[in-house]
Structures are given as C-alpha cells and as structure tokens.
Image (cartoon, rainbow, N blue to C red):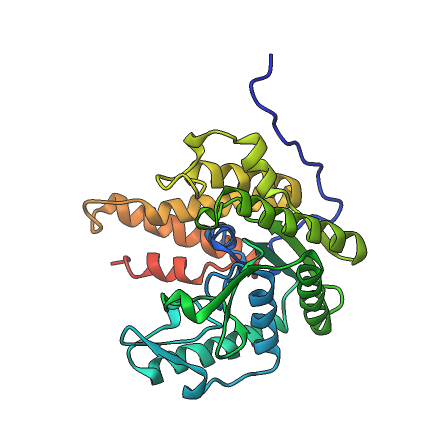
Length: 327
C-alpha cells in the first residue's frame, strides 16, 4: 500500500565530484542548496548578488559581472534613509553610499574571478513575475519597499522567459562552453500574486526551462518544484508562513539531489567531511580538559589526512578553528 507519490530519480551518467567549482544563483532555494554545498566543503559561490527571482534579473547579474561593470552613485537610488541598487538584494544596501558601492563593486570583481574557474552553475528560478521601474525603464531585482506606483508589474511571456534563459546560457558558455548548467524551479510559492497567478508564473518557468534543456548541451533540469508539490504535498513540510519548505523538506530535496547527481566516491567523502563539521559544532564545557585536547588533535589530524588526499576540500577555516583551541 502506497501513501505518497515518491519521485525516483535515475543516477546521473555525469556525476558531480567534490573537486568541481560551483556557482548557485537565484531564489532563496538556490541559497538553501548553496548552504548544503558549503556544509560539505565544496568550492562554491552562493548568490553573489543576493537572492534573485526572475530570469531577467539572473541574466543581468551575469551580464554585469562579465562586463566588469563598476557602479557609481548615479547607479544607486536613495530610499528610507539607505542607498540601494535595483540589481542587488537589500543585503548590499547601506546608509553610506560609499559602503554600498564598495560592497557591490567588490562582489562583482570576486564573482568575475570565480566565474572564470567554474565547472557547474545551478540556476533556480522563482517567478516569471517582474517589476519594471517606470522612470528608469529597467526590470529590477528588488523593489526595496519603494512605492508600488513607481513600478509596472507583469508576468513575462514564455518567449521573453526563454529569451532571457538563452541569453544567460550564451553568457555562461562564453566563459567556457563545457560549463554544466543545472536548472531548477523553486517550490516557494509567490502567494502575494495570488494562487492562480503563482501557478501561471511557475508554469511559464517550467515550460521555458523544458524547451531550453532539450535545445542546449550540458544543460539539465532537477525537479525540486515537483518533489515538493507532488512528493511532499503536505503542510508539515512547510515553514510557519506555509509558503517556504522547512528544513525537513530541504534536507529531503538535498538527499534526492545528492543521490542522483553525486558519484559514490563524492557521497563517501561528504560523509567524512560531515563528521568534521559536526565535530566543530560540538559544544564542550571545558576546552582545556585533557579529553577535549585529545579530541581537538584528532580532528586536526583528520583534516590534514583528508586534505592530503583531496586538496580541493574547503577545510581551512575548520583547521584554524581547531588549532585555536590547542593549548
């Protein structure tokens, strides 16, 4: 007897290895996935422009980085006592315009440097619904709580959505034609647009991505949206807002993702890394005790052994953390 429609995924014929450099970009679901990669000490850059939702904003992020765009104060807007960029999340906003610009321009430089080395890009689209600033005539990544009458709000057509995705792929492939691109559609519902509009928006994204992955090499789709909507179709898998998947759900999606897309060797190595991460998170009452000092030395030895075999593991901060506790 079955009580749910579980989505079973085939093992990838081109599995991800731990030595790959990975960029995740897009909605808060991309942020979640990026944090799992960080936990297992992959070399990952997660949402360098902050959380982004629509295909045009994601395209703009790649375009600005590859143009080596240098932002000036004329590119910013001032609202609610802070300076903001319409191309960036509010994490970049600041009451001092120089601080805001430094954060933006430094991140563009870092992103461009990382883009030149990446192997895999994971793009998560959240919505096809966009806000266009009327005066500046641009589709924004974030409205920064500016009055709604300054924007035109509409849903991208399938043609416009596909065009933005194709332009994004072309930009990425201009860096390296062999870069692997994994698309996914966020299961987070954009309820402020209403139930019907949310479904139309998600359908626009799903149809567009489906067409694109059949057309381009090294492009594929991971069904995070379908896993939540069909496999985990119960509100116990949602946060209190009933819109965002909770930790139980994201853990389940990550399990599906990793089992399908990672090699067996990669999964085994993740298990070893997880032990070190959990050891770091372990709380002790007396860091000066002999028992804890033995524990610390054992962790440092494990890290050094792993790094000798796998020098690409991002374990430097962990090693420093344990070394600081040595007496």
